[in-house]
Image (cartoon, rainbow, N blue to C red; front, side, top):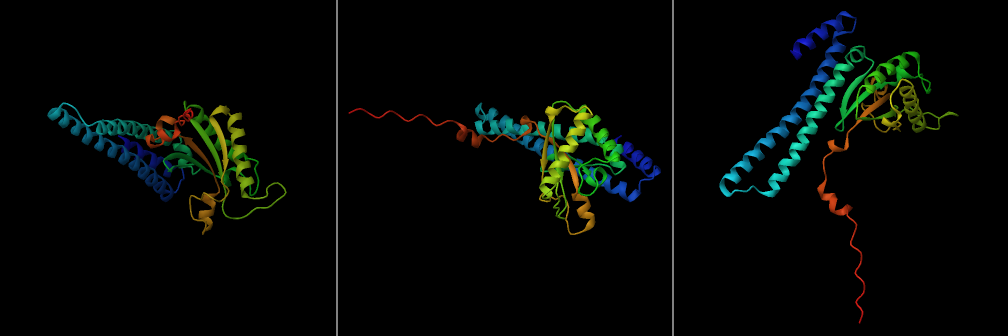
Length: 258
């Protein structure tokens, strides 16, 4: 059923004037990301099945499974649930932003395990400016409508530039420009009804490129605003090896009186 829906979407997109090569590339990219999410969930499930079989065998022979095996199984089940949740969230965003993706206004990526909405700053801003253009305001209005419908999540708005330096009265470097653009986007999202307490801003200048800056096409893709879906605490992998280090040390023993 999913493949039928995708095929119809392709036909509609091409029929509306979107180049077939552009849409096919976007579709292949989204499919690859979905397969990666599926593979992650499948790998977790395979390991869970192995551990459950190991526990069942141990209980059948000795009446009790190894404690470390049980702990690993519990942690893998938690990771599998988190992977399933990320996959569902990714698919939800693909569906909700389908029109914007088809129109080339927005891209959805997974970077460092986080779902990222990316909008080119060429749509949002004039060169070296932070005032959002009318077409950028319209695009961010669509984004705001979706973000408002997502509960229990926080969003980091991050500004990125290419490697072309800037030095003006307003901006001493790309650090200032990228941060100011992120703040401008946040203010507009708040005006459109996104809760302020779900938003944070960051500026990365040219130091976190998504593509090579060796070509003009790569530079254009690096000039972007990213809206990162911040993982919930329960989605993060537990690090029990750090738990002991976080505990306060015992107070020193009083000196022995002689």
